[in-house]
Length: 337
Image (cartoon, rainbow, N blue to C red; front, side, top):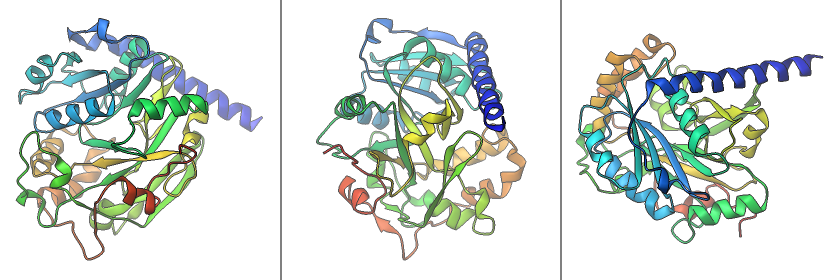
């Protein structure tokens, strides 16, 4: 009886998320919809952005080279030219909203609606502008090669750990130029320790650890960020993310990834948060209070980022590529030979 009650509550939670997304469509104004480009079999990327003109040029080129056919992007009231930049790209469809990011489940209500409408039965990336996905055979095989393999083994989701990349020296001392590869600037990461557990009732994975916990949450590691994500999913209108892309419903989807050291095919999201713009963005986020359920509880975190710390330590590891991540068991090629 307890198990039936748990499944019932999850079904209600999922349907509520889908209903919220249906209602949230009214908050979106279509600036340009390239529906002819969203053909059957297209590989899509859905995202919500605000003031990402610095990151987007490299981000879009990176994923085009990996095989993304079309980008569906919600612009949440950008003021830095992001909207105009996106509108100039032939492979992007753009919607605008000035509604509350936090009230829209941190943008999930908007992106879920786009997935319901355009991504059904298609493989779809859901990303932030500061995330660069690395897969096994990176640079030798494409995302479409990966999705073909996932189709072959009947796996509908692909998991990854979010790996914070950082420079050597204060984060405001780097000189990143628009269009450059951010990993040439953010060359370092923490190889461990990371810990994983399963959470009920949604059976979602919870991975924590890494540099942000080491530097910002050492006194209370439980407040450290959740690092596991399911960024690539073959979408179904019944699906809904419930906490960014950290977890989703139906709950069985969460078992597609078991974290670092897992045996299933998985990847790494190189997290490029700590460019010099992290200081400016943290100032804005602290003021807007849109990025945490209880933003006042994270004022110390914002203050610490704004102080532009040096995240490097003697145990930091310099990034060399996908083979290194495989050797460190940060990701796995599983049975994708």
